[in-house]
Length: 319
Image (cartoon, one colour):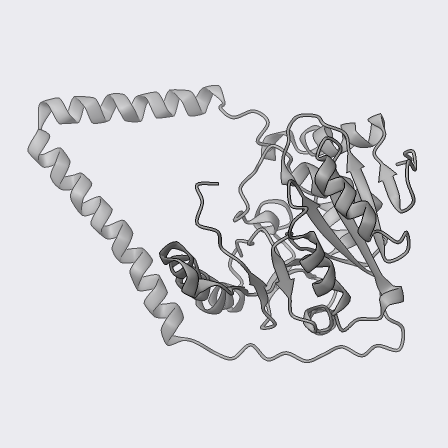
């Protein structure tokens, strides 16, 4: 995918590359794409459920609400029980640090939008990574009309370690579309996604590489635990911290041990690049971060979790 090089260290997506980033997944995997929101059969089933519920309310309101009550109770009880099971089966996630004779290239995708103020902190964190600089491939993915972030990204780019990918404005304006653009340009055998507010542990890449080595070729994806580092600042941040601790320290390790579909967070996902490309990349029309990417697209491959955290800030805002 060729594009113009408008400035040092920057790659501007051309029309063909943008088209692939936007619609490539939909063309290759129409049944899994979220571009079409509702199918006729889904509409019929939904209408039938609503009509049945309305009829039941009118015919037997007391019995209907009793059934709804017990159904909701069973749903929440199942969720709570699952968490108790996960908490009672905690096992340490053993990890080691890779030290290969030849370091494979590791691509880091950083989708950015209106985040010029936190970009310097992200760059500083990436520079602290315990991984050979010559084997890193950092791509800052920036929307072409986000001038402040673009200026900050270009100031950080050096053309070797850090490259800027300028994505022309086009719908859908989503993070998965930006990641598809980065995936097409990725040089690495392995790939990880970091958000602008993330602060990865310096040894996370080496631990992930070791996990890939130990897991063999069928291990296609890893999820590192996410932690909130400003939990003391706000009530909502503390709720995020508690939820993250349960999800990444209890639920995901249990799912990985049981070989069950592993829902990924939107950040600190490590992929074997060839497997990610074979699965079609990301669906630009699916903006859900916590989705079972490989459960949907590469179910026969293994997913796992490891224990080198990524620190992230939680902001108390509606967005």
